Image 1 (cartoon, rainbow, N blue to C red):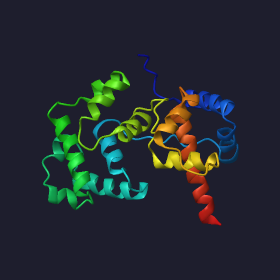
Image 2: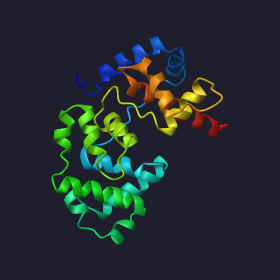
Image 3: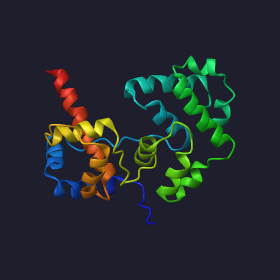
Length: 214
């Protein structure tokens, strides 16, 4: 399987140019709001922790919890993380569910069951299969990790609510597309689906910011 190289400033420009030539609505987003930010997360344990904390909560809430956790568990490594009691970690704001997920991840890495550096070098199917063995890591977390931490150009979080709502608004659809429908729709954006996602997020967030300022 061909492994595409991580996004660079040059390939981001190239990919967006291709996307706007294929989709007039994505072109309008770029014309109206400019290029999207290249949202980035760290690789490895810290990146996955941040993404897990971001499951089904706002970006602000997830960031606040992560900042408290980083102050508490210093350095924030898997080996150090598993030495803390649940009650200590909960003071950083982790729910019981998120605590179970992050502890499972830390234990898998610390025990050498999971080697994120090695997985990064392989194909995405293997990485997905290994990561989803860990409690609390599903396809959304894997897709987001591929897209934001590993900067893979064609990663696509089809179940992401922000992407779904943005596409519905952009195309003026009466109902939300399902993740399965969005997977089919997104085929026209390959091999730049991660960039299409960034454009959709940019559109959704820019519209929300504009609405608040009115």
